[in-house]
Length: 337
Image (cartoon, rainbow, N blue to C red; front, side):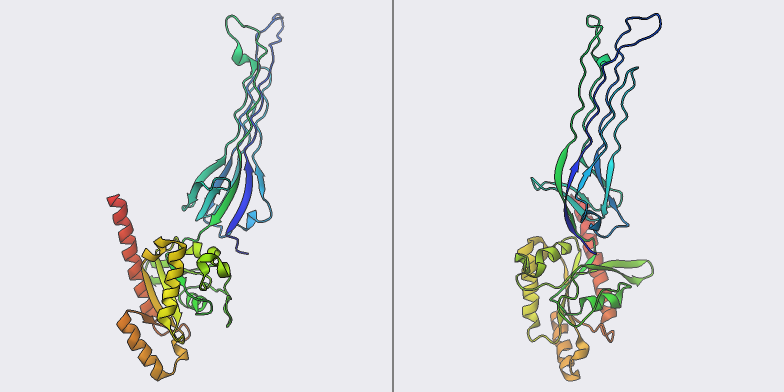
């Protein structure tokens, strides 16, 4: 089951309290203070794990608390620090404070960590309060409480190419054709309800990740058809592939609607490089297909059929070229910035 959004509660462990104690040794009836400090509480840490692909583990368990620190003891024995709790999430997870909306971390690399609830500091024992004029202190400190907060965890897939299109235009069929991914395929709208990833091999040592984004409908930027849940997965892609059915009467209008939905959801999406391809060319009569191919060449569009394989090789090469250009521009921005 694919889960890309959860809300959880985290709390750091309380710090242990300091101890009030005095030495009791043979022939030393009035020993000095030897109360140890309390241990610090454990923290709650979120860590990106490359082996995970969903937030399902947090669907049924919502509360997480780290271990509290042990109390100090006599004989200057300090309490043990509480154990941390590590929450493992998929790479690409955004960690946000639910109350303020502040982004605490954007975990885009495996092993990347973020402390989301620090443990409380342990209290001091009475040995810490001894001075030359105050040799038998009975003061001590309680441990501090750990931090607590509600978090929003939002998974946004990391893919090089995102396939964008209306429902039932052949996105899943294309992904299964160019990669080893096996998404659910059926001849009815909204077959795909969760994003699917596939690795597309271009040549020796050359490959990229393609994401099949569930179908969008007009008004998706307003949340229609679960639009918000689907659109957020497009934000991290470098190149967009607009897939439109060749049998549609007005492909230009379909493309305009798709671009508008992306722009309304996030204006930065409109700036991403995009390739347009007409799918299901095998369903057109040969005469009509020739006319469609001619018009597409004039517009710079591609024509494909995932069933017969028409245009698939050219599509993969074109996407690879656009992806290389996008990566080059990213590197220039990093160097220039």
